[in-house]
Length: 238
Length: 370
Image (tube, rainbow over all chains, first blue to last red; front, side):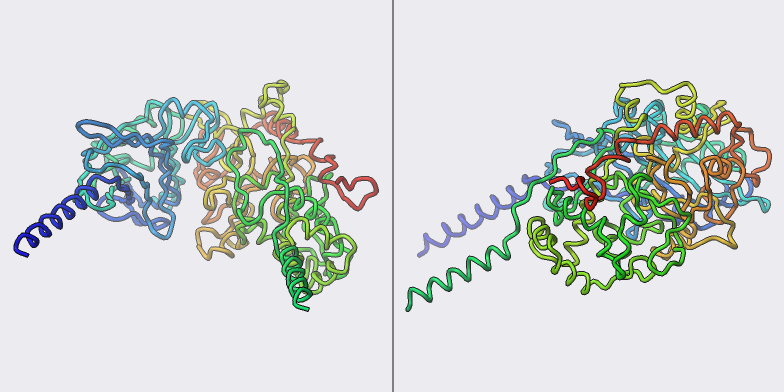
């Protein structure tokens, strides 16, 4: 009897350790949850509440879509590349956020998330249907020009004038890879990582953009560059 | 005695199984251009030859109406790309309906919401509503089911396609037939396949169609692509992206449109963006058929836009001249440019689609293909 108890205890401990190890090493799902922000506040659609950063008047956002592509999880020893990784972020839903779920990944192995804002040049120059890429979709300009990476439309009211706002930002040069840290909770369960997409950064630049003067951006390279230069700062861990 | 009982029970089971087992059906093999993209067919309504055959007969059968005089095809005529040539459809009540009869083609693709105000999310949901509407076909579904059961051919057609005669299976069959209406052999399709070239005028029109004007880079455009996708030429499929307020009315006269379905103020005055496939034969135009010709449509976009709270910023902003007055909306296309866009729109006419016997009235002698 005195020998049986330690033996059972040892076996039990071994089973627990094996179970924990198995759970830690088994693949998990990682949800990247994107929240739209304007500065410190969650973005509200169709509300004339946002101050023109570089001039008079207030503006509202009516439509907002953003392409994210080629999500990689990067670790010291390995890199996970999500297949068909083209995601059209939009927030005009009841939840107010957009989820991307990476299934069956060894979360413990990675410490950074790398992704592209926009569509990489290869896909941008093709008419493939991959992920959310859709040549018949709203983000497609046409097959010769490629995709809008960012679509932001709305209205600025200034001095009793109503000015349409149209920011369609694309072009290969605008494609931007960004990296954010992947905080690993415990590695024990599926994980949700929340990311803040701060759209105010597009206009709150070193020289704030006066939306009355730059109310539309589509194909003019200088204007496109002006807005797209904020892409590296668009995302952060919430 | 016991042997007879067993035989009776076995016969009963066999009969029950035959009556209730799903029929053996044959999936439709079809091709569509790669550029049309992904499509969805509901899992509970497989796309089969049997369902299409049944749906085609139902579509053309006036039995579906209360007075047995009106069929779906009364307002959706093949030679008019399944429209009726009227500004607003007229059905059983002889009163003009609020909406123009919408063209039916390539319905597996494009917006996932049907009717001009998007009030249903599938062809199956859509199919029974006109049948029951008092102003359209004014039919009682129970009565219709009885009439179908009494008919010479429908019991077999339903049994082969779905098993039983029910309203749900009627809707499924009509949906399947409508899915079969694929238009993919227009001049534009042949151009996309590299088989032909467009004329200079058509090619100029195509380029204008595909461009949003940007005076900063001297890019002229007709602004069509902002609502009509480049290959399908229909509204966009995702969410409500395929709905737009295209400046037909000012705030005072703005109709509900999509708002009637969503209750969202931002959707007031938004209507479904239709396909432009076969647009040259589907006059009159717009949800209420207010424009009699493509020239009038182009004139509207060029200089007839009315401002309203939900008017698309893309329409307000689009101008081929540098904007001096932001409150003035005009594309400022030239006559030559408008004619070129119309020439391109004519390349979307698909004569094969308009005359395809598979889509024609099966009650006409000699066209009921088995």
